[in-house]
Image 1 (cartoon, rainbow, N blue to C red):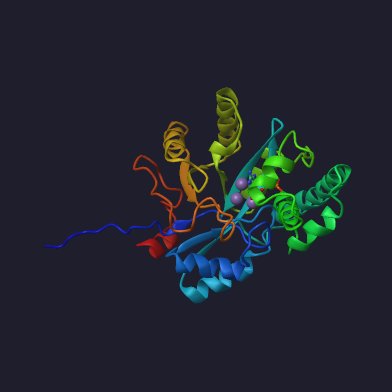
Image 2: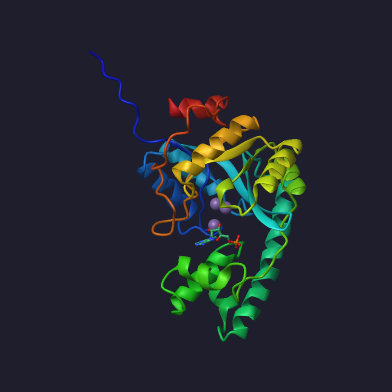
Length: 291
Ligand code: AMP
Ligand code: MN
Ligand code: MN
Ligand code: MN
């Protein structure tokens, strides 16, 4: 008798970060880590930057994996920050590159204001301190958080966020990112598909969530993360139903940022609920790596 045992791990992970944004591992080390966890198809989705894709692709080739070119774009929608993932983008597309570059400039301006705000409560030198951790083109709150841990203001990154870097706390600076419209147009112009990242993380009421989904669909958005490292099982089910109701394709990703600071380890995500249509359903080359 042949006993069919389903593979215990999901071999695809469509959301991860490297040192190009706020991850702890270089693109090469990230791909090696994914490989060690049994991932066959990985997307590197750094915040607002696609500098790491070339290196990650080379390493994936060496290891017999498939690297999907991705990006996670910071968007402001109705004064809320929303993250939009672009998958299968052309990393040489000028429109995309220029758009991302404009967000990175905004990040630097925000960082200067954050440092000023922190300095007013007696925390000096945080811009330089954060820049030490920002190894590449983007600077973000995570880099400030690492500096604040280093200088003893909190025991870990999570605590720094809670006490200093979220709305209502002294180091928080309101910032306007790209518009939803622009982010989707860059993704589409570069041949990619747009996916709403970790939908359960936004503080939108029911009506605004519906409005976001409708606007996203109207702009040609196709996917939503049903499984995310930051979703509970209940949240995944909720967004599985929403993906069906809105005819959105379902994505899955750990949102891995490196050892010790991630919601979830790679290769440890639950499978997509049966009712979902996986976003990679018709990606023949990808499916070749998964079968
Ligand atoms: P930024 O885009 O610079 O505003 O930073 C957002 C990033 O900060 C996210 O992608 C996470 O990596 C990290 N982050 C956000 N909230 C938290 C939190 N509460 N604890 C730890 N990291 C967080
Ligand atoms: Mn991040
Ligand atoms: Mn995100
Ligand atoms: Mn992310």
